[in-house]
Amino acid sequence: MKYPIDNSRNVWQNIARSVTKTDSTKRRGRGAAWLARRSVTPVAASSNLVVPANKRDLNGPVFLYDSNEFNGQTRKSKGVDVMRVELYNWRYESLAEQLSKEMKKRYFDVFIARSKEELLETVKSIIPEGASVSNGGSLTLAETGVLNLLRSGNYVYYDRASAQTIQERKEIELKSFTVDYYLSSANAITNDGKLVFLDGNGNRVAAVLYGPRNVVIIASVNKVVEDVENARRRLQFISPMNSKRLNLETPCIKTGYCVDCSNKQRICNYFVVVETSARQPGRIKVVLTTFESGL
Picture 1 (cartoon, helix red, strand yellow):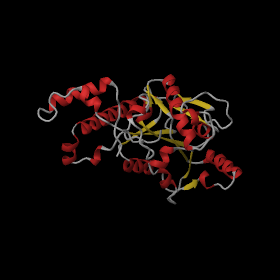
Picture 2 (cartoon, rainbow, N blue to C red):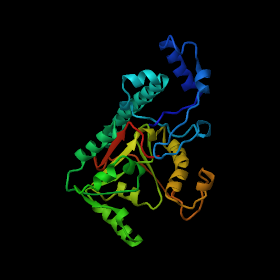
Picture 3 (cartoon, one colour):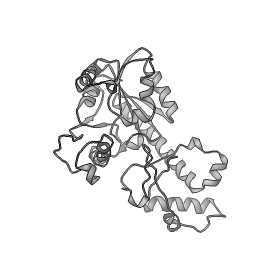
Picture 4 (cartoon, rainbow, N blue to C red):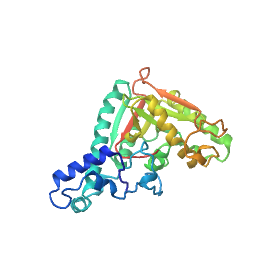
């Protein structure tokens, strides 16, 4: 169960006002100071790691749990926690709807998925059985079950994870340029609908830009940032975690933050912004999820 965490004073004050207005019994008179003293711990969406709230970077991503898990009894028992979930779910829903409009102006086909089940059904509706498919490295594809779907036997899947040697892996990556559908995630999306990527080897961004007949980008709206400059900041925040996930020996896995190194294993080599798909309308299809996935 993934809880939304934001310790900023304004958020706590707004929640406190809502609670004191709507709950005339149990929490009457308890304001932001009382709420702020509560011990809250975020649970990382992609692992079992528990991070104390006072150790967390407040500019990092927010963690949600699925409102579908809550019945009437749970709502009564959770009180303010459920309110916070509903507020974040409302925000993510609103953000996805608005972002969808902006991205369509940029000639992207856009879909919205509100659960993992809906995401998988959306991918099935986009990619016909028997189509050739491949993908770039993506935590999002793995944890949402999309990779398992590609490996289901219903598609001609060029799976680089099946490679036994570096050369075989490279051959599969080159074949990926010829597939019907190439799947990936984005590292960030701007408020006005631009897709932002940061790559180590470049095979992922190269396939997104040119080659495959269709590209399917699956990304949670927790990756949305104000503009390209803020996308760079977001990438600096998540890159050490990706380096750690890939077991690389880069300075950032020791410091926990980006130091703009010259290490040969660095994954921050190719920064790419996809402005539009105007030359090939609809080639890039974006599935926005209102639940969190990836980093």
